[in-house]
Amino acid sequence: MIAKMELSKTFQELKNDSSIIIVSHIIAGLKDIDSFVLLHNGRVVLNKIGEEARTIGGFRAIFEDGTIVKNDVHGLSGRILNGSRLQRIEPVTPEDIIYERLTREIGASADSGG
Image (tube, rainbow, N blue to C red):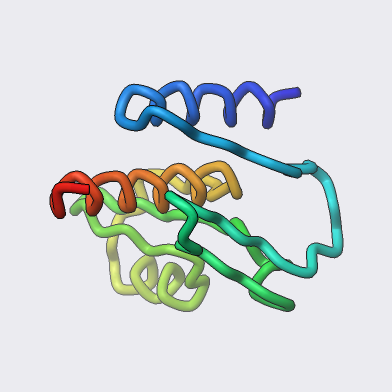
């Protein structure tokens, strides 16, 4: 239910920038995903297959100096050991990935006049 609410908020935000958004077959809680495909204007903008599809998500660590470390445990621990102060760690969800990729695609379409 929470994932659906988050996804709904994500697409409501995107709706302000784009006229049509279609999402099909997002099923939360599946352990074994064979592929994750995201289309925008009939074009594949994200295609993760096999192990890449099973590891969708992760974390984002934000440090006080503004540095962001994504999905890199060794990089995160190295920065902490070197004295960087960790501000917060956030989960990265499939909805975040969809939102970021579509936002990037919509921005690129607007910049190119399409």
